[in-house]
Image 1 (tube, rainbow, N blue to C red):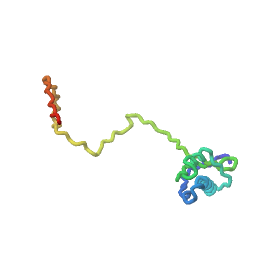
Image 2: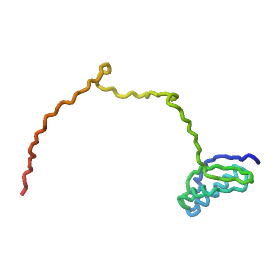
Image 3: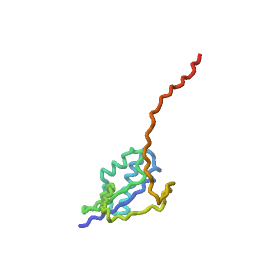
Image 4: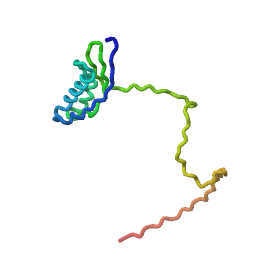
Length: 141
């Protein structure tokens, strides 16, 4: 085989919860192996260390419910199961190419008439404030 076969799957590990709490992570690893055998039609399965660390990350009792994996069929005749990391290529568009989208919801109208330009208010000079003596509360005996 000169060409490698590669597929991405999301494996549901919900049935792991049916087993005893001390065997859940082990059963999750076995379920991944069985899934790979069934879908890739090869008996020899190798699970990458990174994926195993993901399964065991929260301990033996609580493995993840779903795992996204990449299965690669190698030239040596075995399946390598690894954690799927998404490689996204972003396309940069210039500001001229982007279209302006107007919101369908209109902003509430202000009370100022829209035809006339709003007048600028000049700040009035404030008179100096006189200090008023604070009233004292009557003393209780």
